Image (cartoon, rainbow, N blue to C red; front, side, top):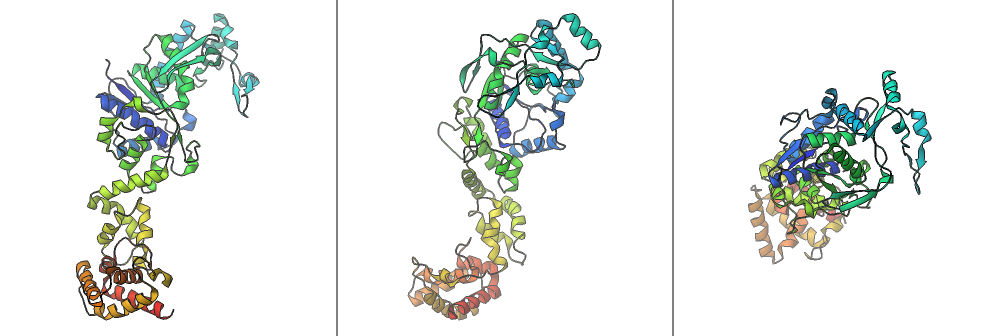
Length: 486
């Protein structure tokens, strides 16, 4: 068997969409699982859509996700250049297009934009219009074609597809698919600016680069018969096709930029870890036989079998991604976690508290890094709160009981200077034993008083350790005042 070679061939048009990242990931996993080669090719033939800096975004995304390529613009494997605009300069695509013209598999088209507009047809049942070319220029004589070229008339080169019979192609996910040749429009291979179309350049480059498996979204299924006819016209071997299912939002609509989380960089900015994103994206249309959900890139390489990719659309479940991210955060080395969490903590807490202690409290409680703010804002300033928070049925606490507990504990807490978590806990434990109440009946009122919040990242004594004696006592006195004025 030939060595497996896959490619990721993005267009430099902006941030990397989740669907493109999945294509890159699946191509990478197929190659690595089989011990093959993963190529990066930049498809910049549509100059009008190119965004400045987009190639840097592509490289940055691949580096951040660990999808290292074996060949590409920066790693020549002998089949370059790996940037299509550079390949255009060599005349490569025009050369292959002319070979098809000589075989009768393609032809020059000199039709004006006005004539093409006259061919526009409404798509039945929709508001869309398409141009179905009528093969007008196919019937030009060789002499007419040469005269037009000599006169410098603008032209495109079109594929000459049959109008009768059927074309069948095989996809590893969808099986054999047969289409009527009447549906195969004569697509443009070379545009009037001399650049190849995406469809033509793909076929030529995939063949010349020895690509064995082509991974792409299922929106390209309808174009595959045309690709097959090109391969057959050249006498080239057709690669294996792997068309991935559509990715939808939770309303089952195509995932769009309006969702706010359609690109890799969107997700990074929202506080997701690249490892969690990769893990989540891998499961958008595929799952391992053992249904394991949390997997490192190495585990994905080991388990990935593209034959198990689903046909049905994959739903981008934002809630599941957040859960998955929280699992990765919990398992992070603390120093690495603190390095990433510190800016989020400092954005909220400006007082000279031990930020590492705060970070340890929140590491197991957040789903994404921006969640940190809502967990720790009370450290900076005690929020105004309602005394109903002192009521906890399970702890059997009420505002009246809380006032009694805080009033009795205040002098005990004032008398100690050791505000370490363990020392404070032992102090309160001694009070509880003496009073004959439950731990919660003392700890709940204290935690409420020092935080002013229903939920906190740490227990009462952990919070007091960070706040220190002066601030803790000030907040407890404030709690006593609130409860007394009720």
